[in-house]
Image (cartoon, rainbow, N blue to C red; front, top):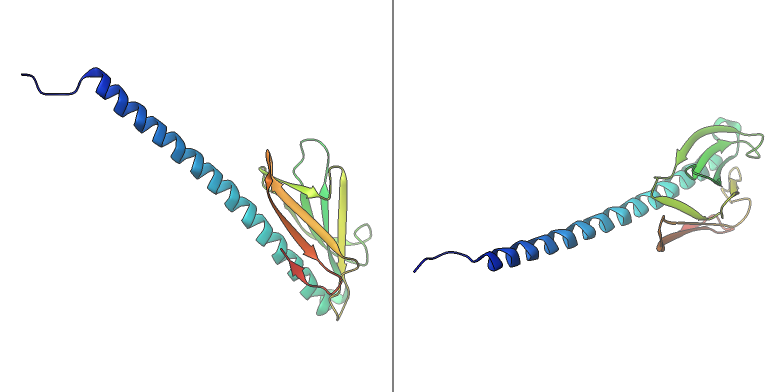
Length: 154
């Protein structure tokens, strides 16, 4: 009597291994995308709080703000930290592009939003909502709210 595996048993084991590997890879990709989204939220909040702190301290004798832009086309959405009383007349201190798998839902396509913090109080020029999501998976999203009291929440 010969001991060993039949060809069908071998195919079953290879099939099960392939299915498990595929499921594991898909979960890993989903986890990475969610991590990218959470990182982008934390990064935006950090820049918002930095801008607010700079305005409170009147760093460089100026107000500070953030300009969020959702351009049309293949360009990545981005936001810019600037100093000045308006974005148009201000000086950009830094520009941060969102990762290629993340997009702004608010502001909507081909629009922008700006928040400028007042000196000393750090109160924003207006209440603003920023919503970001994974491209191709809009159900995975996060919303950042800056209310009129200057509170930044997500």
